Structure formats: structure tokens, C-alpha cells
Image (tube, rainbow, N blue to C red; front, side, top):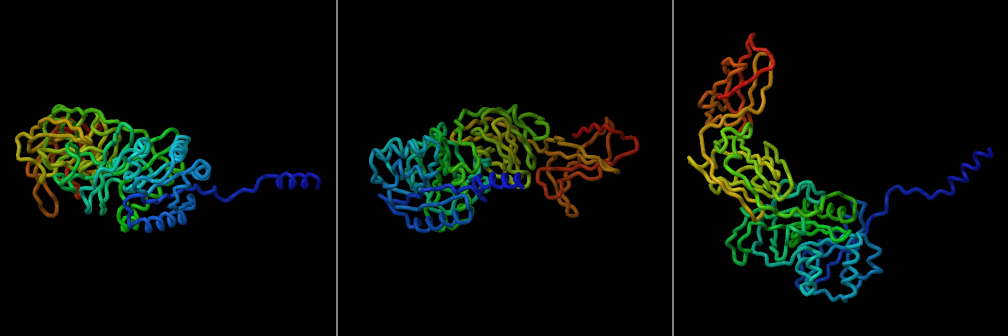
Length: 444
């Protein structure tokens, strides 16, 4: 009994356990000293709704810039701006905000947060750029450049949204890591006041600031944007990231000059013949700095025209990309986008830099990915087998390839596109009694 009383006494002295961690506090400042957006009211309701449904956040919306002082900021984990113009704050308050972030807290901004504090140089460094006009007010396509970052992972690889699309001055990939970029195919680059000489229009980015974290997105002009579920998801995850509850690399990926050559392009199976590509095939390009630094895979079934910040064009027509990394890009060349040949200009665009070279066009560039074994036949999975024609619901090659298994010519049962897979061919060959593993397959 004595031992039981001691145990009970010991337990009584322990601090009470809580069922969940205390929510992280975010000060949401919506003071407009310049243009006031009609969407601010909706944004406040959305932010509070996000906090109520997540549980890890507590949002304090305010117009009171007086809260930007060291004592009040000490009670928050992040500050988030939907502001404009020269906010009426003192030099001491400005320093307090910078110190708040440098010492390990979060700072975020949406839309016109870059249209704020033009007379305060350090603010431009904090947020990452200055607003320089919005040439396009329309539906646009947006590419997710960093599909690994928590803030935008759910949006990968691209999405469409109506936006008052900002462009910027003073932005640098040397200082910020790009999360989202504008799809330049969805806008008119000859519109008035477009930043000349670039194809790189970042729309969301992150970077470290001292020990703190910074997130910004140019989206958020319209009330309908704040009601958009994917956008809401991005804002929620950005807030969780700013408050240290989600992961994502913020280190910048500075651009380097991309390099590649005709000798480094060919069919995606074995790159032969080098420097030659063919319609309705998968191709690979090797080189250096072929993306801003990241890697991403879109998959065979859902290729995109821009991936991990890179595009590949053949005579000016963008190819569908499947995989992109600094050293390798895999793409699909559809018959519809294939030039007439016999030569085509290849251009690899990486943000606002590019490398170009010429490649040859051929009807066929056969290459074998892998061979699988069935009881009665072998299946050779290949690319680059040339034109096809439909027969009985299947797309047969118009030219039947030659297949040798262990040096002996094999009988072909089917040669054509794998059902549902453009660019991927399957060649079924009869498995005879004389065939024995391992199977060495040659395709011509």
C-alpha cells in the first residue's frame, strides 16, 4: 500500500499531458496603403476556415500595423501579408519585423505583398522581388517547378486558374527557390509592358532569411481564387511550412548554362543511333544543367510540356516531357509534332536560358527497353518502330521489324503499339523449344 501511494504521488507531480500540440500562431496583415483588393474580406474568411479545419494553426487577421513590433511579434510564429503601398510603420518596427524572421520565424506574402514598401530596400530582399505590372488578366496555365515542396506538391505537375498575373523586377534565382512558373504558351508574350527578353515568369517562391523561412505567391487577386480548393490547399501547406510543421527545401537553385549536343540525343531505350529521332517514339536528351537543379517525373501516361523548369522544342514545337533532371530529359515525340525533316532544330529551354543543336529525323529508330517472358512467347518492349496502321483495334507497325533471339531469327506474332501507350511498342515473338534463357534479343 505504501508503494502504491508513492506511485500515485509521483504521477500527481507530473505535468498534465495534452492531446495535441498548441497551434502555431499567424498574424495575417491586410492593411492597404495603396490599392485595396476586393478579395481581402474573402481571404480573411478563408484563412480562418483553414485554421479551423487544420487545428495546427491559429490565424489573427488584422489591419493594425501597430502589431508589427518586437513585443507583439514575439507571440506569433509567422506573419503573412496581403498588403499594398507604403505601410505607416516606424523604422523600429521595420527592424523588428526583419529580426523576427532572421531569428527563425516565418514570413509569407500573397499577391500585392510585392506591391508594398517600395521605399524600404530591405523589404524587397525579404519578400524576394517587386511588382512590375500585370500584363495578363485571364485564365492561365501554371507549372509546378518544384513538385517536392510541401506547399505545392498537391498541384504537381500543373494547373489552370484565372489570375491577374504579376511579373516582377529584382527577382533572382540566386536568392529564391522557384515553386511555380507561368506557362508562356497560355499567354500573349507580345502584350504591352511584358518583361522583354525572358521566358521565365515565377509565380511562387521560397527562400531562407537568416534562420527564418519566406514564402510568396503572386496569386490571390480574385475572390474566386480564395474559394478555389487547390489554391486554399497551397496556402494552408505554405502556412504549415512557414510555421515549421511541413517540410520543403528553400535553398535557391541558381541557374547555370545548359549544355547538350546532337551526340547526346536518341531513342530513350539505348540512344542509338545518336543524333537521330523519329515520330511516335520516346527519346532521351543527356547533358548538364538541363533543369534549374530539380528533378521530376510526370509519367508515361500524363506527359507535360514543361517539367522541373525545362522545355524541349523541336523546330519550335514543344515536346511532351516524361522525366526531367539536370543530366537527362525523357520526352515523347508525337507524329503530330514531328517536323517533316530530314533535319530539325532542338532547343532546350531552362528558365530564361537555352541550348540548341540540330538532330536528324528518321522514320524509325528501333530500341529495346526490356524483354519479358511468357510460357508461349517473348514480349519485346521497344520504341522507335515507326508508323502504324489500325487493324482489328490494334495499331500494327507498317514495317515489321526483324527480331533475333540468341542469334536466331524469331517468328513475330504481333508488332505494334502497346494498347493505350503512344510511343511504346510491343513485339510478341514465338517462344520455341530451342530458346533457352538467358534470352539475348536484337531488334532491327
